[in-house]
Length: 173
Image (cartoon, rainbow, N blue to C red; front, side, top):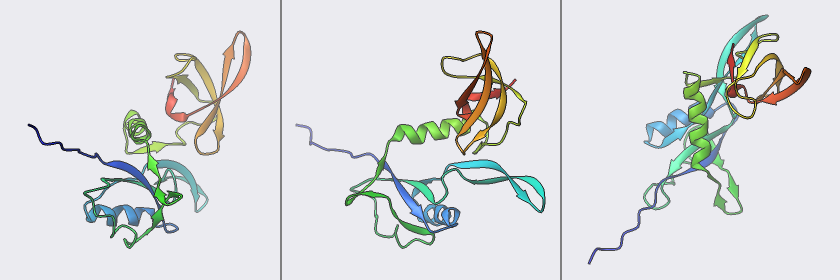
């Protein structure tokens, strides 16, 4: 008779860091052997009057950590330099769907870099949609709307239509 064993796989949880310490928290948790994921984004920022491309956290003050509920030691996490606390719903730490982490990592891979480039298009650039019902159509990049959406102008049935879409679903034409 085979012994009954259950293996609980690691799940992703959400941590908050202290202000401006998410990179430090990622490094320190990594030194302790934890699997940590902090999605990065490239953004244009003004520095001394010039626009400079900066790499920073896609979700400032948040990072993901993969933990096994039974076998991993959770105790040192909260006292790690840069870490503030687990995001919780009630008393339970918030579990993040693995699909979300995989999707974020795939977007990074699709761009060929470790960081998602949120400012890679400029007003007037011709772009092609790579996913969704308008896949293959070309449009004109108008602007970024917040940190996660691009506004493009499409010509559909001889009419100019604005469309908000994730920049990861666009390619420069």
